[in-house]
Length: 218
Image (tube, rainbow, N blue to C red; front, side, top):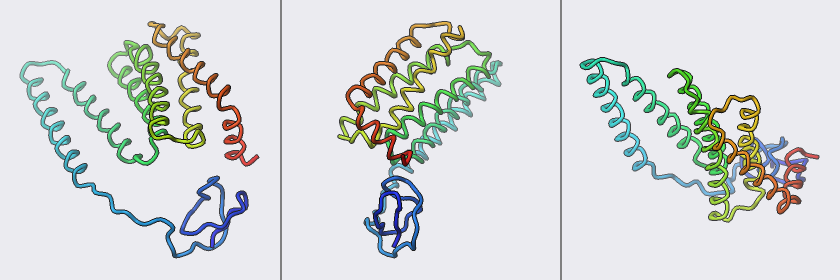
Protein backbone atom coordinates (compact mmCIF):
# COMPACT_ATOMS: atom_id res chain seq x y z
CA UNK A 1 0.00 0.00 0.00
CA UNK A 2 1.15 3.55 -0.73
CA UNK A 3 2.05 5.86 2.16
CA UNK A 4 2.52 9.66 2.45
CA UNK A 5 5.06 10.79 5.05
CA UNK A 6 3.77 14.38 5.05
CA UNK A 7 0.11 13.51 5.71
CA UNK A 8 0.91 10.26 7.56
CA UNK A 9 -1.86 8.36 5.78
CA UNK A 10 -2.14 5.16 3.74
CA UNK A 11 -3.33 5.57 0.15
CA UNK A 12 -5.23 2.95 -1.81
CA UNK A 13 -5.17 2.73 -5.60
CA UNK A 14 -2.44 3.66 -8.05
CA UNK A 15 -1.20 7.25 -7.54
CA UNK A 16 2.05 9.02 -8.39
CA UNK A 17 1.48 11.84 -5.88
CA UNK A 18 -0.41 12.16 -2.62
CA UNK A 19 -4.04 13.21 -3.34
CA UNK A 20 -3.99 15.48 -0.27
CA UNK A 21 -0.70 17.40 -0.44
CA UNK A 22 0.61 16.42 -3.90
CA UNK A 23 3.83 15.29 -2.22
CA UNK A 24 5.98 12.24 -2.89
CA UNK A 25 4.68 8.86 -1.73
CA UNK A 26 6.35 5.53 -0.98
CA UNK A 27 5.25 1.91 -1.12
CA UNK A 28 3.62 -0.32 -3.69
CA UNK A 29 0.31 0.61 -5.37
CA UNK A 30 -2.66 -1.60 -4.62
CA UNK A 31 -4.65 -3.24 -7.38
CA UNK A 32 -8.02 -2.10 -6.01
CA UNK A 33 -9.40 1.17 -7.35
CA UNK A 34 -11.08 3.44 -4.80
CA UNK A 35 -13.32 5.13 -7.32
CA UNK A 36 -15.46 3.50 -10.04
CA UNK A 37 -14.35 3.94 -13.63
CA UNK A 38 -16.99 5.88 -15.52
CA UNK A 39 -16.98 5.93 -19.31
CA UNK A 40 -17.72 9.41 -20.57
CA UNK A 41 -20.10 9.92 -23.44
CA UNK A 42 -18.08 11.90 -25.96
CA UNK A 43 -20.02 11.18 -29.14
CA UNK A 44 -22.00 14.43 -29.09
CA UNK A 45 -18.94 16.54 -28.24
CA UNK A 46 -16.90 14.89 -31.00
CA UNK A 47 -19.73 15.44 -33.49
CA UNK A 48 -19.97 19.13 -32.56
CA UNK A 49 -16.19 19.54 -32.89
CA UNK A 50 -16.18 17.82 -36.30
CA UNK A 51 -19.02 20.02 -37.58
CA UNK A 52 -17.27 23.14 -36.22
CA UNK A 53 -14.02 22.07 -37.89
CA UNK A 54 -15.81 21.56 -41.21
CA UNK A 55 -17.43 25.01 -40.94
CA UNK A 56 -14.15 26.75 -40.15
CA UNK A 57 -12.30 24.99 -42.98
CA UNK A 58 -15.08 25.82 -45.44
CA UNK A 59 -15.18 29.45 -44.30
CA UNK A 60 -11.37 29.70 -44.60
CA UNK A 61 -11.40 28.29 -48.15
CA UNK A 62 -14.20 30.67 -49.20
CA UNK A 63 -12.35 33.66 -47.74
CA UNK A 64 -9.13 32.69 -49.53
CA UNK A 65 -10.98 32.30 -52.88
CA UNK A 66 -12.69 35.68 -52.46
CA UNK A 67 -9.37 37.19 -51.48
CA UNK A 68 -7.68 35.81 -54.58
CA UNK A 69 -10.47 37.16 -56.77
CA UNK A 70 -10.56 40.71 -55.37
CA UNK A 71 -7.04 41.08 -53.99
CA UNK A 72 -5.77 41.87 -50.53
CA UNK A 73 -4.66 39.69 -47.61
CA UNK A 74 -7.55 39.99 -45.13
CA UNK A 75 -8.24 36.24 -45.37
CA UNK A 76 -5.03 35.62 -43.40
CA UNK A 77 -6.55 37.46 -40.44
CA UNK A 78 -9.68 35.33 -40.67
CA UNK A 79 -7.61 32.15 -40.69
CA UNK A 80 -5.51 33.43 -37.78
CA UNK A 81 -8.73 34.07 -35.86
CA UNK A 82 -9.93 30.52 -36.52
CA UNK A 83 -6.58 29.10 -35.43
CA UNK A 84 -6.69 31.14 -32.22
CA UNK A 85 -10.21 29.94 -31.50
CA UNK A 86 -9.24 26.30 -32.04
CA UNK A 87 -6.26 26.66 -29.70
CA UNK A 88 -8.62 27.92 -26.98
CA UNK A 89 -11.09 25.08 -27.68
CA UNK A 90 -8.30 22.50 -27.56
CA UNK A 91 -7.07 23.82 -24.20
CA UNK A 92 -10.62 23.82 -22.82
CA UNK A 93 -11.28 20.23 -23.92
CA UNK A 94 -7.94 18.91 -22.68
CA UNK A 95 -8.25 20.61 -19.27
CA UNK A 96 -11.92 19.97 -18.50
CA UNK A 97 -11.42 18.78 -14.90
CA UNK A 98 -10.67 21.85 -12.77
CA UNK A 99 -12.74 24.89 -13.74
CA UNK A 100 -10.71 27.41 -11.74
CA UNK A 101 -7.43 26.04 -13.10
CA UNK A 102 -8.84 26.21 -16.62
CA UNK A 103 -9.81 29.85 -16.04
CA UNK A 104 -6.25 30.80 -15.13
CA UNK A 105 -4.76 28.91 -18.08
CA UNK A 106 -7.23 30.37 -20.56
CA UNK A 107 -6.57 33.87 -19.21
CA UNK A 108 -2.84 33.45 -19.78
CA UNK A 109 -3.15 31.73 -23.17
CA UNK A 110 -5.70 34.18 -24.61
CA UNK A 111 -3.63 37.14 -23.41
CA UNK A 112 -0.46 35.76 -25.02
CA UNK A 113 -2.24 34.88 -28.27
CA UNK A 114 -3.82 38.34 -28.50
CA UNK A 115 -0.44 40.03 -27.98
CA UNK A 116 1.16 37.82 -30.67
CA UNK A 117 -1.72 38.56 -33.03
CA UNK A 118 -1.48 42.28 -32.31
CA UNK A 119 2.27 42.30 -33.03
CA UNK A 120 1.88 40.24 -36.22
CA UNK A 121 -0.70 42.71 -37.60
CA UNK A 122 1.37 45.84 -37.08
CA UNK A 123 0.81 46.32 -33.33
CA UNK A 124 -1.90 48.86 -32.60
CA UNK A 125 -1.85 48.15 -28.87
CA UNK A 126 -5.40 46.76 -28.59
CA UNK A 127 -4.14 43.59 -26.91
CA UNK A 128 -2.54 45.55 -24.07
CA UNK A 129 -5.13 48.32 -23.87
CA UNK A 130 -8.25 46.17 -23.93
CA UNK A 131 -7.85 42.36 -24.11
CA UNK A 132 -5.40 41.86 -21.22
CA UNK A 133 -7.24 43.95 -18.57
CA UNK A 134 -10.74 42.93 -19.67
CA UNK A 135 -10.05 39.20 -19.68
CA UNK A 136 -8.38 39.43 -16.26
CA UNK A 137 -11.43 41.23 -14.86
CA UNK A 138 -13.83 38.66 -16.29
CA UNK A 139 -11.62 35.78 -15.07
CA UNK A 140 -11.74 37.03 -11.48
CA UNK A 141 -15.52 37.57 -11.63
CA UNK A 142 -16.07 34.17 -13.25
CA UNK A 143 -13.96 32.45 -10.60
CA UNK A 144 -15.94 33.97 -7.73
CA UNK A 145 -19.26 33.08 -9.40
CA UNK A 146 -18.26 29.48 -10.18
CA UNK A 147 -16.89 29.01 -6.66
CA UNK A 148 -20.21 30.09 -5.15
CA UNK A 149 -22.39 28.14 -7.59
CA UNK A 150 -20.33 24.97 -7.16
CA UNK A 151 -20.04 25.69 -3.41
CA UNK A 152 -16.30 25.11 -3.56
CA UNK A 153 -14.23 25.34 -0.42
CA UNK A 154 -11.72 28.17 -0.42
CA UNK A 155 -8.90 25.58 -0.35
CA UNK A 156 -10.08 24.17 -3.69
CA UNK A 157 -9.44 27.33 -5.70
CA UNK A 158 -7.46 29.75 -3.54
CA UNK A 159 -4.12 29.19 -5.34
CA UNK A 160 -5.63 29.82 -8.79
CA UNK A 161 -7.49 32.86 -7.46
CA UNK A 162 -4.22 34.34 -6.14
CA UNK A 163 -2.50 33.68 -9.48
CA UNK A 164 -5.36 35.37 -11.34
CA UNK A 165 -5.31 38.36 -8.96
CA UNK A 166 -1.55 38.79 -9.32
CA UNK A 167 -1.87 38.43 -13.10
CA UNK A 168 -4.47 41.20 -12.99
CA UNK A 169 -1.96 43.55 -11.38
CA UNK A 170 0.30 43.24 -14.46
CA UNK A 171 -1.46 46.21 -16.16
CA UNK A 172 -0.13 48.39 -13.31
CA UNK A 173 3.44 47.77 -14.51
CA UNK A 174 2.35 48.58 -18.07
CA UNK A 175 0.78 51.82 -16.84
CA UNK A 176 3.93 52.82 -14.95
CA UNK A 177 6.04 52.12 -18.05
CA UNK A 178 3.66 54.21 -20.23
CA UNK A 179 3.08 51.24 -22.52
CA UNK A 180 -0.70 51.44 -22.22
CA UNK A 181 -2.43 54.11 -24.32
CA UNK A 182 -6.00 53.66 -23.06
CA UNK A 183 -5.62 53.69 -19.28
CA UNK A 184 -9.19 53.14 -17.99
CA UNK A 185 -9.50 49.36 -18.63
CA UNK A 186 -6.12 48.81 -16.95
CA UNK A 187 -7.05 51.02 -13.99
CA UNK A 188 -10.29 49.10 -13.50
CA UNK A 189 -8.42 45.78 -13.70
CA UNK A 190 -5.79 46.86 -11.15
CA UNK A 191 -8.49 48.20 -8.81
CA UNK A 192 -10.44 44.94 -9.02
CA UNK A 193 -7.29 42.91 -8.39
CA UNK A 194 -6.30 44.95 -5.31
CA UNK A 195 -9.84 44.83 -3.89
CA UNK A 196 -10.08 41.08 -4.51
CA UNK A 197 -6.73 40.50 -2.81
CA UNK A 198 -7.80 42.65 0.16
CA UNK A 199 -11.09 40.71 0.50
CA UNK A 200 -9.18 37.42 0.33
CA UNK A 201 -6.74 38.45 3.05
CA UNK A 202 -9.36 40.03 5.35
CA UNK A 203 -12.06 37.35 5.14
CA UNK A 204 -10.07 34.22 4.26
CA UNK A 205 -6.72 35.01 5.87
CA UNK A 206 -6.62 31.87 8.01
CA UNK A 207 -7.55 29.60 5.11
CA UNK A 208 -4.98 31.35 2.92
CA UNK A 209 -2.24 30.86 5.52
CA UNK A 210 -3.20 27.21 6.11
CA UNK A 211 -3.21 26.47 2.38
CA UNK A 212 0.21 28.09 1.87
CA UNK A 213 1.64 26.10 4.80
CA UNK A 214 0.13 22.87 3.45
CA UNK A 215 1.35 23.33 -0.10
CA UNK A 216 4.82 24.54 0.92
CA UNK A 217 5.13 21.71 3.48
CA UNK A 218 6.09 24.21 6.18
